[in-house]
Image (cartoon, rainbow, N blue to C red; front, top):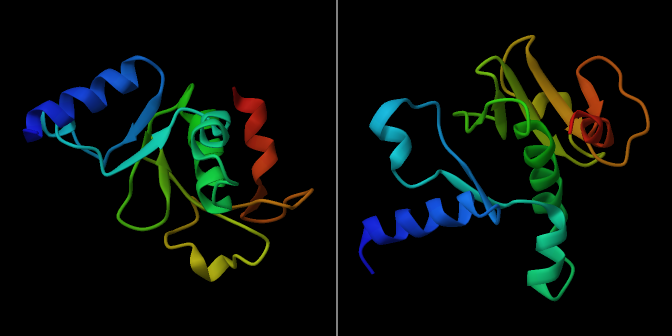
Length: 132
């Protein structure tokens, strides 16, 4: 399969609402290249296509990306998992994730699964479900 064909298929899957491509901060022709990461559109597809329990890390990242990208620009940064609107950095993880895992400045946040309330730069993952 030719590289261009693969990129066209990935684009078609994105347009059909099956996948979500995550690119680095790029403009113009660079965005037409292959994505840095590829996610299914939502977590339900992960359960439907996997057959077994999907990995929890993938579920967390897919959920966050799905909810935030609905209204905001989400890109792939050099460090951390996501950068939103070219301003806020997010690292996604479980309760064991620590603030030192977040690389960045005051606009860097740790999004944690299994946490009811947030404090400081630690935010509960479930809150992002209200953004959609």
